[in-house]
Image 1: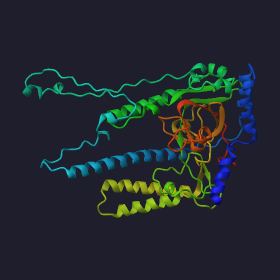
Image 2 (image 1 turned 45 degrees about the vertical axis):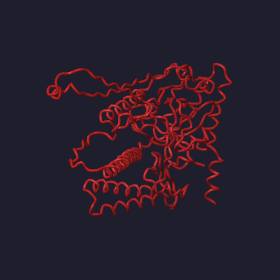
Image 3 (image 1 turned 135 degrees about the vertical axis):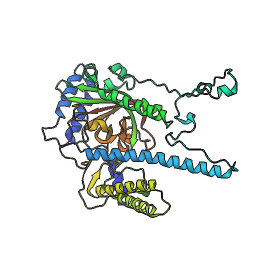
Image 4 (image 1 turned 135 degrees about the horizontal axis):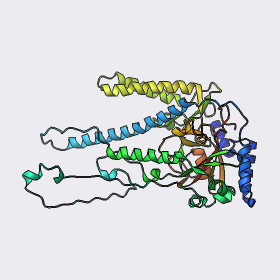
Length: 435
């Protein structure tokens, strides 16, 4: 009962990640709509005022970002492994029901991907087939010619160009100029970030690799998830990383100090990520609620490892997984993380977060403003994501935009969300949200 009351209290309080000063400046930005011709100066002043006092910038905590990226990668491959194992088991069961022909099974090419029907490569991609039949020579000749019986698979896609003008941006959200009157002038002087081109390079490289091995392809929705990435500079010199994209939902994170219990389905899930890239030393002795689930998986792994029938390959995988889980337990004992259900944060690709040469590149903990429709939502950069995808927000942020959002339902599916991140605005020390 107490836990539920506390949970309800969290939700009633609304956004309080920013302090009163920050909301004051956001209010100024919102009120800029009432000024004519002064919007750019208003925004420039706001960007300058939220610039933090000079502090010694802490070294990028690449270990947090790397661990989170590694866990996401593991989860992706484990999901693929489980899917392929289930398909393999089903094929064996179906084969057992059929009468044997007496012929030995043919060799299996393990270099191929998991897709056995090219129509299943990815829904949303129109798939065209054409069979050309022509007359040839006698069979004894044709059977020796490689060109007599062929098949080809060609995948075509168009790499988008970035939106560069306010009119192109307002194709997705026609309220941008209304919400931020100074934005048109700033966009006019903005430059397209090289990260936009790198993002689509990563997407096409992934698609090329998956297509060549007949693996499942990136969805069309996730291919075209970014309208633009701009480098904006205010009159004062304040840098802004501007991203126009969609918003997928992130439901990661855990913190025993603030949320000592979590549902069993989450605790026992192999796919739930208890970490975020933004983390800090624990403040209390209350254990992280995800630890029991980790310990159960460690025990199950050690039991399977001891079984005689476990293959050498499987044992190697189990040892690696057990070591990772044990390391995770130690991490959960000493650190706390954001909780997507409670904390408003956004996700930025890890290759951007770890870059040290681009002054416009956001870092974990930097403050941000998310614009959707005619509302502004404060947030921080709280997590690192894949290098081939953008446009992700925490469940808390998603529900503020659309109360019907869930871990499986986006708040919006179109490229109507603007993310404005202020590089260099993060606090000198990471800590729990102050609400």
